[in-house]
Length: 316
Image: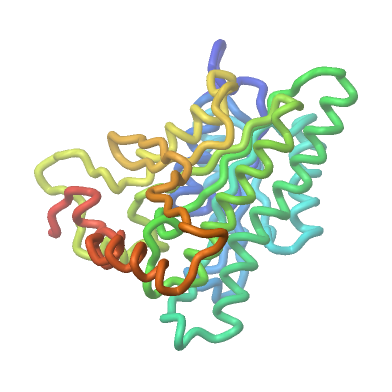
């Protein structure tokens, strides 16, 4: 798989949640570009995080990479456990001499309307998505900072986090997931600002892909039977991850991307849509009523969108 002149040749990467779906496609792409990969997956069969942990999914992907001529090792570990995240980074550094790329992808779902959600359903999703992203980022960041201090200059450090458009548009049955994904964006931009002086970049992707995590969202959007591009195939997300992991993306930092087959969109940071100033030192209820009520009366009741409208797909 690796050959002379590949963009990630000599680089070492970790991809979490890489036993299936998006993580698998990303691990394969990084390896295709020359990276040596730690393939992490806790291997639980349920998308809600249920079932016994298994090394099989990660081992199968690592074996696929090795069969194609690349270098890969499987790692069975829960990203939400602080010490297991440390061990994952230590594995990459010990085996490959460094860690250059971290792709955080692991996640679970516990969908429920906010008025029905249990404490455990909230905590479980926040734990795996948001805490899991923090745990691995914390130890990768420490490694990159120490390398930069030891060499006296910038290092190749690339962090790619996985968010979702749920944090932008809301997702009625996923308050835990939407909150976690919004938190991941905040973690990403904070990390980008903190590590830029060391040569490290941190970016987030909001992928649209057909996986077991999104089987409900994209129910009815089948694989095209006429040979047309399947825009929801996870493999279409992976090239952006490979690019962000490469030296070519050295100036791309603190960004959020939406990506699916044939499309990459850069999400602009929130801007002020309107501003209202009080006639006196502070607002009264009546003045706010006069200003804000007409403004919102003229706007749509919600800024949400349906997957079909965004993707331009036809249900199969």
